[in-house]
Image 1: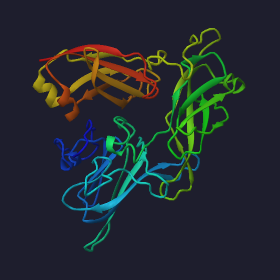
Image 2 (image 1 turned 45 degrees about the horizontal axis):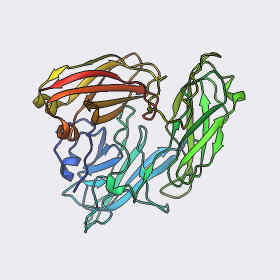
Image 3 (image 1 turned 120 degrees about the horizontal axis):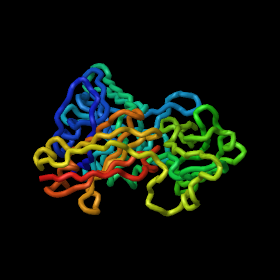
Image 4 (image 1 turned 90 degrees about the vertical axis):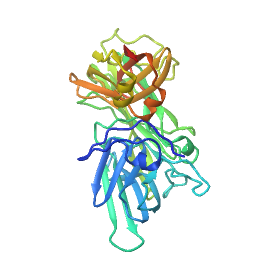
Length: 390
C-alpha cells in the first residue's frame, strides 16, 4: 500500500503524465524537481524522493544543505537499500509490509534515530548506486529550485514514529512592534542542541541570541530592546540558525530554519497586546500582506476540474514569501496547498490539482481562499472567491 499526496510540478526537459497510486505511478508523477544523470532520474515530491531508471544494486539517497556558518554541505537526510531495475527506488512513500517492516522511511545514518528531513529550496538530493552485476556506478542529483512548492511536508503517516520530522523554524512572534524587546518562539528538530536567533532590517542585524531546545523541540528567545531599537522601521526578519548533527558523520553542523517577519512601526503604532508568542488565536497573522486582484473561473465542469484542476491568479503582495491555498465546501476544508510567493507586484497563478483533489471534488459550490505571509506558519487573512463545479 502506498501513501499519496498532491503532486508537484516537475522541472525537467521532458514532461510525463501522472498516473494514480502504485509506486510506478508515484515515479511518473509531476513533482517539483528532477534531474537526469545517465539512466537514473531523481524526483522530489515534498519530503519524499522517487528515483527511476536506476540499475539493480545497492543504492543510497542523501539530502544536503549548506552549513549556515561555513557553507559546506551538511547531510540532513539519509536512506540506503537494494534497488531493482523494474520499479522505482523510493524513500518516504511506502508503508510497512511483512517483507519490508520499515517501509521506505528515512534512516538514522550516523545518528541515534532516523529523521525525515524538511527538504527546502536550495537543498541537493543525490542518488548513487553500485550495480551488483558489474558495470560502472550510477548517480544523479538535483538541487531543489527556489520556486518549488513546500507542501505537503513531513513523513508519511506510517513513518512518523520511526522517522519524525526534522523541522527547524521560528513559529511565533509579535505582528508588529514600535521597539524592543522582541520575543519569539519556535520548534527544533530532534537531536538539535541549540538555536541562535537574530533580527535584520536588510542593512543591519542584531547579535545572535542563543537558546536550548526543550525536550519536545520547542524553544523561545528574546532579542533585547537595545539591539532592536537601532534597526530601521519597516519589515524586520527574524532568522534562526540551528546546531544539529550531520546525518552522515554525526559531527556538529549548523542549518538555517524558517524565519518570520515583524513590522517595526513608529512609537504608538504597535499592534495591541494579545498577539504575543504563545497566545491562542486563529493562527492568522493579521498584519501579514494580502493578495490582491484575485481571479478564479467562477464556473467549471466537474470533468474539467478533475482533469485540469482549479486555478487562481493574483498579484503578489510585498513581504510575502509563502502563499497558502484552501478549498472549502461550506465550512469544511477539503483540500489545501502551500507554494512559495513570486516576486512582489507580479501576477502569480496557483493551481490545485492531483489525485487528492480528484478524490474530494464533487459537484457543488466551493470557496477558494488564498493567504499570503512570511512563512507557512504565519499566513494572513485570506481573500476568498466562490467556484461552482457542475
